[in-house]
Length: 102
Image (tube, rainbow, N blue to C red; front, side, top):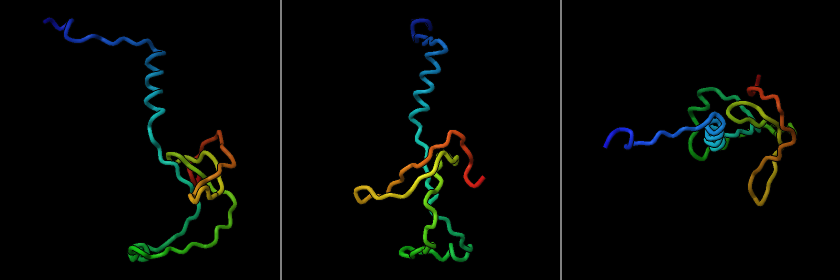
């Protein structure tokens, strides 16, 4: 058996190659983060955290909070409860993506 019959070359034009690449990219899972509340703590306080400790936060005074994917803000949302599960209703979606806290 010669090397020509052992394997077939797969030939794709640029459009097919781009479509195949996009299909792979579309299925990559990226963390989406809703920055609802933030608290600064000392290293000593963080090191003393144990199972069962309750971290207290000030009342949420903002109606909207940033929502980010891959550490880039893409909109703002509000906290909601749906069927006893926490959710986020997006109130704005920004075409201009910015890193959080920029």
